[in-house]
Image 1: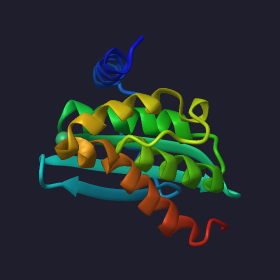
Image 2: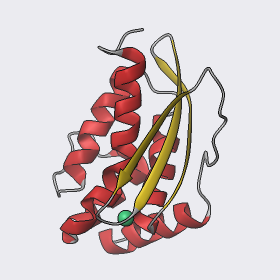
Image 3: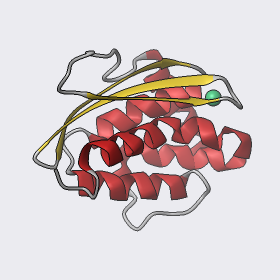
Length: 147
Ligand code: ZN
């Protein structure tokens, strides 16, 4: 499958059937809201971290298919990872959307498809919105990566 086909497929699959969609509004989850005024995307993310491990991520919001699908992909990839592993994947993803090949492509799973967004620089903020939200959440929950 070429990159453009993969890009469209991953976006459509995750837009139509989003993973980890819907907030819990529970006290043991940390809530972050971010928006992307250039496109009108609104992103809500909840993260539950225990002993340095991401136990759960929930995501909800509204906006374009790129931002919404990316939130689904992000949540699916990062649940079960340590905070440290997640930070590395988030950094790698920021490279991917501007066309940089990460050291470990396989580690990014479906998220590698967002390399396709490099052709549309105006949409990079859509692709990274959920990742910025989870990054902020991890900063607020764990400070330097430890609890
Ligand atoms: Zn957007």
